[in-house]
Length: 149
Image (cartoon, rainbow, N blue to C red; front, top):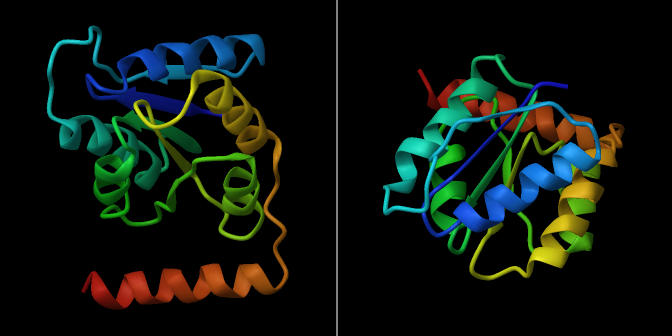
């Protein structure tokens, strides 16, 4: 799996923590920034991850900002991106099983690091259920095509 990760300044600590979780799980990733916790604007970093997933350069992505809301908004502007703001184990599992989430978004200021670890681990190992959910993903894809004309 090719995975990309980025944050803004508010999510920097969370991003660095997630990189350790990925290393523990031997999941290769590319850090798209920032390199420090100095103030940056989240749209640039959200777009870098979502763009890589949208273009097929990465299979999945992870984004971290203060609340996760801004990164979610940015990421879901990109075709073929299903970014989900996840805040516990249940939403991590459902985001993969029912929505085939390909971009995980967490709030660095709203989610404790231990919870982030549980979320990332569950999100990485949970498969898409397919079935009736696959039809819904196709409906989303069709809607996206229609709106992007």
